[in-house]
Image (cartoon, rainbow, N blue to C red; front, side, top):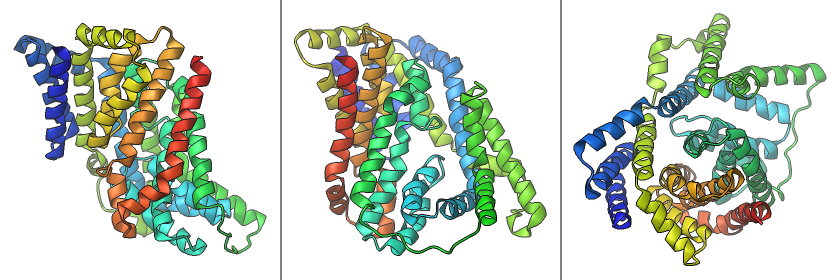
Length: 413
């Protein structure tokens, strides 16, 4: 019975998302419906919401996501991101390497229309290298998303580590080769055959100055990372320092050049950077996760399927396809499947492997979804059809997924 009610709640959630209801609200409604259909009363539902919103995990996760969006907005508003990319190209001395890295760097921050922001950079460099429009679109998307497997400030990775209750660094180490494979394949299929344009020569002093500029303008991101992995600070606290660094850079810039003055109170700018829909999405995910956790029948049902010989890997792939493709998001697969699948792992190491399998499978279905917003924006910018993009994915995505399967088999056998 509980499986039927779970399917019904998911269908309702999918319908609401298709009607442009925030995914967080949709998941909350789905969680309420799942509870009611299984005989839970209003008191239970109220307590689930109260417990979820008061959990330290939910609070710190919501804070981290909110601060990442604020940091991204500040770096965009203060023109820090633009200058970081410009100095990167001057530092790397390579159009091919810059076109590879620029979408990834812009993708590290939850900037509104982030995929659209990297399009002009990719387009300009694509002109220099004489790359076709459909290849430019693919470059913008592949190199933007490859980092999602291992970037510590990715909201999806943070969410996975919190729900899975494992060390984020262990998870990143496991998935890092997948990101490397995706970058190598992207370079091989999209950039390898193009010749580098000649660049203006610069002396050592000018080059060192370029490195200094890149270090300065990337410091809000670097500080946020160092705070977590070197000084062992909580994510939200490290991000607060990163936000402060962006503000200090702007104060320094304003003292040198009036064009960096935006005539707006810094707290108003920070407030405008806050993206409540993303925070609500996290809250909805955590509510749904907690409700699913309360139904032992789900785990009994899954164990029965496994006892009948159905591979857990097949269950993961099918489930991720049903969840992430129509929702165009990896996070719901994590929210729904982590609580159901990870407890079945006999050891912590196997739990990490299951988490990687769910994460990568959910990512792949999200990535190819026609509703994937980054894809929609990129197609519009480059005036490319979806079928042309899919042709460019024909080898790179299956091979990337294969690399995950190889890692999985090597570790689990």
